[in-house]
Every structure is written in structure tokens, then in C-alpha cells.
Length: 108
Image (tube, rainbow, N blue to C red; front, side):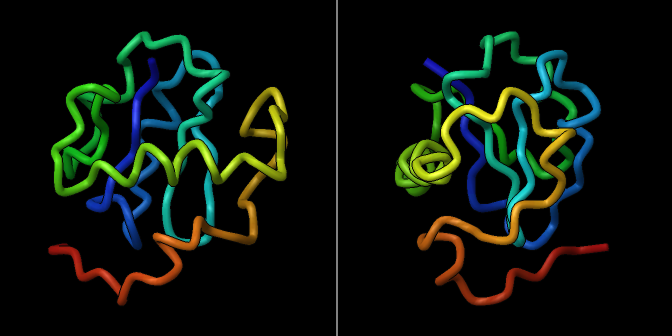
């Protein structure tokens, strides 16, 4: 089991979750953040600090965003397990599900 970052994060990337994550498993794509399923230790520290409530425990992800579990896992297919997001910086890609979304507007 792992945590999942869903649609409310797209084009926002607040990054409060990155600062809170004790194992550095939240990676930055071009339009969204992604939690590495093998590096996440299920501590839950990221969930309450997300200002847009985009982070869910895998089994608690709303049905409308169920595909985001797959997007979080598949984002790492060609990256493997880098062992820490900080050293990677922003990764110049997104999962196709996220890349295909129209620009998301967020209230400032």
C-alpha cells in the first residue's frame, strides 16, 4: 500500500508534502507530483499538509481519481527506484494521464 497524489495537484505542485516527507519519496514531474510506491513508508505525513487535499491513502482514493494510483506507479517505470527525489530535481515528463489533461485552474 502507498499514498497517491491525485488530480487536484496537477498544475499546482504546492510542495508542502515534499517538505514534510521523511523519506524523500515525492518526485516532481512537469505538471504534478508523484509518490514512489516502493519508497513510500506509509507514514501519512504528506496527507494533512496538502492544501488542496490531493493526497490519499491508496484504498481511500476517490473513485473519480482511481486512475491516479496507476499514474503514480507507472511514472517510475523507466526511472526505477532513484532512492530520493531531492537529487533528481524536476523530472521533465508526466504520466500520459496527466499530460493529456487541459490546464488546471487553481484559486490563488
